[in-house]
Amino acid sequence: MMGKKHDKPAVFEAHLMGKKHAKGVKKHAEVLFDDKKILEQSLDQETRWKRLSLSLRMHKRVTILQVISQTHCYRPSKEELASHVGVSTEKLDKLLYNTRTPLSMQQPIWSDQDITFQEVTPDSGIETPDMSVGKQMMRNHVRNLLNVLSLKERKIIKLRFGIDGGKQRSLSEIGEIYGLSKERVRQQESRALYRLKQNMNSHGLNAYADLLV
Image 1 (tube, rainbow, N blue to C red):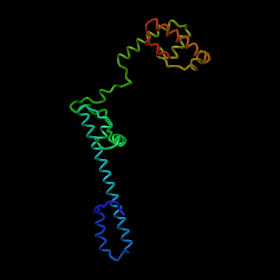
Image 2 (cartoon, helix red, strand yellow; image 1 turned 120 degrees about the horizontal axis):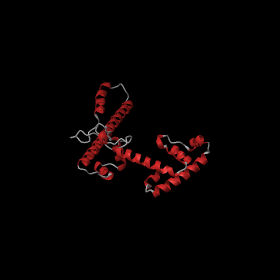
Image 3 (cartoon, rainbow, N blue to C red; image 1 turned 90 degrees about the horizontal axis):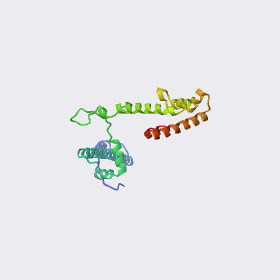
Image 4 (cartoon, helix red, strand yellow; image 1 turned 30 degrees about the horizontal axis):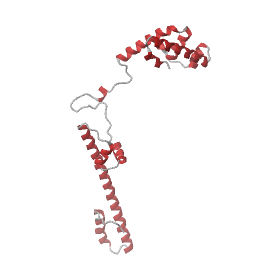
């Protein structure tokens, strides 16, 4: 027995009309079973459509609220947005995730201008002129500081940090080049770095000291 009285959907009404032409074909118990089955299927279909419609309405409502907040330069909190839409914050998170719209880098930032996201997004792989000049100055300072080291220490530091355009070498690789153990190379590197840091402090080049780790 159903708790609420539902209007018979159109599918059920059509079934009843067609059944009048099939008198005597089925027994009374079979007819009642079919009636119940058709009614349950049609009600289930109607419920699914209502749920889908509700979900679409909430999606649309969230999108409208997002546009309004952007237009008026106001960003509502998650709780405020959930309250306006009429859902929990957990449900809102799912709605916001499903309503995300991917942006194209070629898309204009403003509707009345031709400036795209690509034009204002910095390329991390390209050095700016200031960065290039700064790195060159650092290389020159480091080369001058290397003069306080012994010849072998200079070579080890140059190989270790890839100074003079070479590739950075591991302690093991440097040990193979000079016939030294890895631990011996590490000791000489530590002593050389300590001397370099001391001279950086005396020359006011403390900013470079963090690079020697």
